[in-house]
Length: 178
Image (cartoon, rainbow, N blue to C red):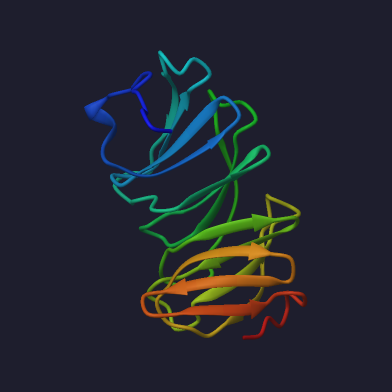
C-alpha cells in the first residue's frame, strides 16, 4: 500500500523484548527473549488486548510456529523442542517435548512432522514426528552447521544457514538427504 497507517498497538514493558511474532486467526503469538511467549487478541485491530503469557524463567523462546491448536517452540535454556496446546488461549498447556540437540533455531510444521534447525549443533537439521503431541519423536537428521531457518514445500526442505541455502529431500523422514 502507498500509505500504510497505524491502526492499533499493544504495549506492556513488563513482558520483555519480543523476538518473533506469528498470527493465526484472531490471535498473535509473541516469543519473548526474557522467557516464554505472550498471546494477544488482535481481532479488533484498533484495540489489541492481552490474553495470556507463558513464562519459563529467563530462558529465551527465540522461535515459534503455530499450526492448528498447537504452538511449537524451543526453550533456550534446556534446548527442548516444546509443544503447547493453545486451544484455550487463556490457558496454554505444555503437552510434550523432546531435546534433539544443544541449540535452538527455526521451526516449520507440515502434516505430522516438525522440521527444526539447531543453530549451534553440528547435526543441525532434524525431523520430529508430532502426530502424538504428548510424545514427539526425532525421526531423522542431517549434519549441517549454523542451521538458522527452514521452509518446507512438498518433498523438500529449504534450509538457510549463515552462509548457505541447502535443499533437503525429506520424503523419507528417517533418512533425509541433501
